[in-house]
Image 1 (tube, one colour):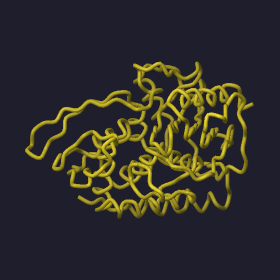
Image 2 (tube, rainbow, N blue to C red; image 1 turned 120 degrees about the vertical axis):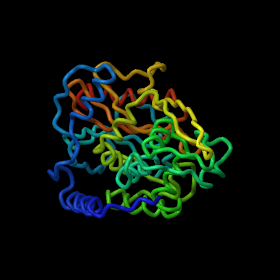
Image 3 (cartoon, rainbow, N blue to C red; image 1 turned 60 degrees about the vertical axis):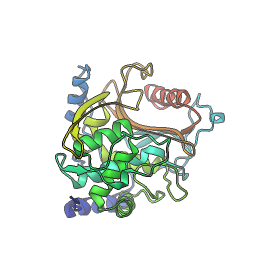
Image 4 (cartoon, rainbow, N blue to C red; image 1 turned 30 degrees about the vertical axis):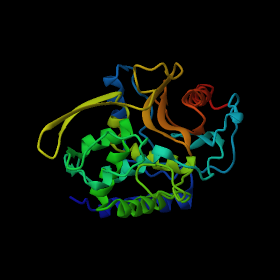
Length: 332
């Protein structure tokens, strides 16, 4: 079943973009995002402290120059860094945030956004030939042609486990074909103001005409976190479910988040005073190791933190922690 784009969502997005262009930071347009979403999710993960922040604002900030961070080692081949105080629409850290880079699986933020905007979560997604033909070393569920799952299940597999075959399946379901879906991705990027981005696939595997910037990813994630379903998925450490193969037989599947800040079995805890809500990882040979996240301080104030293009996972998470310490230090 092909999902049709909701006209009302397009008009709202266009209105937000026009307001952004005219006013820059502080447009004052309220976003349909409630702090109760994160409060509920954190309570479910054992966080009982009351969140005191105002609802997530749609005021988007413009990056005009680099803002260096003490302790961030640029010799480690970081491609790009961005840290934004969401409520104040201010930049706390920025290194080459508007330079075009390969996005790896952070691409899946846009794939998820379009699926959430255009589909109900109980829609049946029937997997076709689009799931085949990926590189042998690509991350896959793996799924088979004819498998049937709900959109909710597909989004969990794609966002949590970063399954590239499922990203293609979602694209074909929403757009009618992967190519048509990529056109939708690029149109939506323009509507959000992500004008230095071009998508040629829905999963993020390296391609010459597939690129973004840290700033554009910030714009895209800012839109994603308006939706409860997105927050629910990216904040989940482990997910078990049952879908069906082409013969109607049950397929049991358990996946874990690729975000080590979310995983409870990995020693990548954020600094005391910072809670990671979730986001999206990405790793390819061309892009390096990437991670963009929504996090909160002890007062519930939200921040978006993006590190792109480190040489290894340890460096990625250590630099994210440096940015989190920047939050704790008041951005100084």
